[in-house]
Length: 308
Length: 244
Image (tube, rainbow over all chains, first blue to last red; front, side):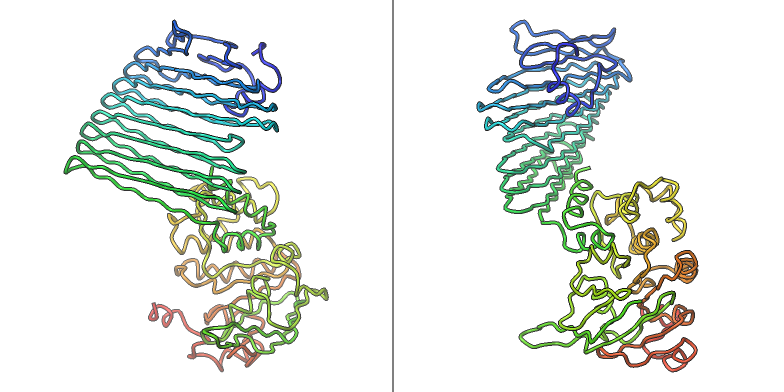
């Protein structure tokens, strides 16, 4: 990471928990430039010929390896659209860590739109972690619009952990997934918005094979005058199980719209959705205050726990 | 010492004033195990909530060791050494049992220390320490965790609002042991329990019987218990089970 300055390194630590060069394969991108790449015997990373992104090829049978592909933006006014394609071979078990950090001290908007496509091979297991973070006190906005497309072959599993806790002014996220027989998708989303931020998170998960299952759970907190929209649709086209849950804490003058939806096209599709929006319960605050916490400290602990 | 001076508490219900506590004065000495009993609606829970600062009295004054605390917040009173175990423990999505104990202790807590508190209330620590304090826990489990959070604070005045409600027989028998141990370990600490339970009443240094927001009787367990046995203020375990 010698090519990166201190701001970029700080962003890197926020989004990928990386303080130094990680073990395994990695590709670092900073202000639109390649800042470091490492491949392994099983994991290859190649730039697309047209320069729009990278292809990550994971050989069949790759077990206990990881890929880190963090992106940082620290130049005000930098806008980019990046396409990253992951080809995960059969019978693999890998961890993929993505994430984007933007520091914008200037007056122009900075924007990163990452399009990630995953092709998960038969019986493979993928854990995907994605963190978004923004910092900087400029008037320029920090904008992230990630698109995630997942294609899952028979018997594959994918666990996605998506976190956006701080500093991103505007997000419009869309995740789509197509699952074949016996494939299983678990999504855990954590979102907090503050100030006048807006965040939209959409999911469309299609369960196309027998025994496919999806569990999409979002927990979010909307503070100040921020706005959130959660729009999750699970489609059951085969005998399958689908569950989606949106649980939100609303504070101050925040606004939240939750639109969970289900579409069953097969008599044996079992689909459930849950959605709850509410402010922090008064008795939760009181309980923590009787332990000696101030009201603000109690609020912070409740939110930290909720978003853990 | 806790002093309540002419405490009254009223609420408005459908345009009418309802008096819950009426001009109540009490002095509670340090180092005592005191049980407040009385029929439902006599104002017991309200009184405990007024002492903890959760409710503000309509009139009257409260002193803790000579310092007036009437206008002190819940947080300030907690920091001055008042602990409160809720009758109905609060659930938290995401917060784990360990988090709650850590917050109760108010400083860094080792897993070992947290385990000690859980063992005190009869919970196998390794099964519970990382459990979320949410609806996945039963009422009895939550109640024991609630008691553990008060134990962990080691406060000089600990309030327990019906600690026996919703817990099973095993922990009921252990409750009395917990109170005795607390008193031994925290020198001069006062434990104030709201309870109808004969067994808890029988180990009290003092029993206070409330009726319609006033102190009806007050005395040692030997004096008071015979008078209130077989009434709503003192129930045996079997009657309790019958009620349920």
